[in-house]
Amino acid sequence: MQLDDLAADFAEVQHALSTRQPSSTTRQLTRITAQLAGLISLSLIKMGQRGPARAWGRTARLAAGEAGDPAVASWVRAQDAYTYYYGGSVPEAIAAAKEAQALAGQTPCVGAVLAAALQARAHAVLGQQAETDAALRRAEAILSSLATEDVTESAFGYNEAQLRFHEGNALTHLHDRSRVWEATDRALTLYPASDYMDRTLIQLDRADCLIHDGEVAEGAARVARTLLELPPGRRDGLILQRARGLAQATARHHRTLPAVRQLYEVLELPAGSVGGGA
Image (cartoon, rainbow, N blue to C red; front, side, top):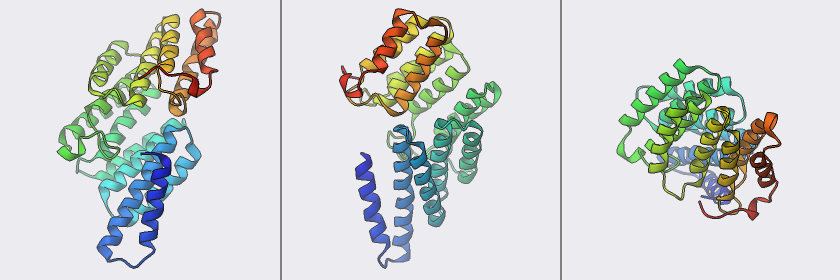
């Protein structure tokens, strides 16, 4: 769903809330408000707009609190954890992820598994392997206990493809290349070809492993190839942020390599000028 559509839906729900409604309808509309605000926040995160994402996250938290639904509150707080994580505030991401899991209590829900997986990735950024593995085990356990209707590709669901992607990303930060390939092989098998965002980030994680292990030319070439294969207009937001970070890593000592120079040339292209199918 596009950001404009989400904003229109949000405005429509707010209009409905401004009129007299039965209390049960008001609670339902408030829950939908929290979910829509959370989706808008998530969309903004993917676009790299962290300030507006945080603002919509606050709106989502307020609505979730009024709705009194622990599962929604957990999901909203998990989105906050993602905002912190992609904003580079790793300790805050861990704290928000822990809170999201606590809000869920003993009930398996999407917010809890999202938060556990994010917590694993955040611990991995800090090089905390034991904490990473513990969080991944929690995510596995919660996923195995989710209701069938929650194991879905929806933004309000979570499935094995997502967990394997998140696991692979955590292991990338720990530089455990063999486990990265194992997890991401499974993720790529499970993800539909249409899911360009996560499939692209997986390829960038693999490039990260290659670069870290000294295979700089191959890693840089993988980044460039991955960007060039994206549909027009998709080389932005989180993808561009991640690719630039990898380019900077290669350039520290290998700027003269042809593959590194080509990567920088690709990064300078207008976003709409690339694309050969996902």
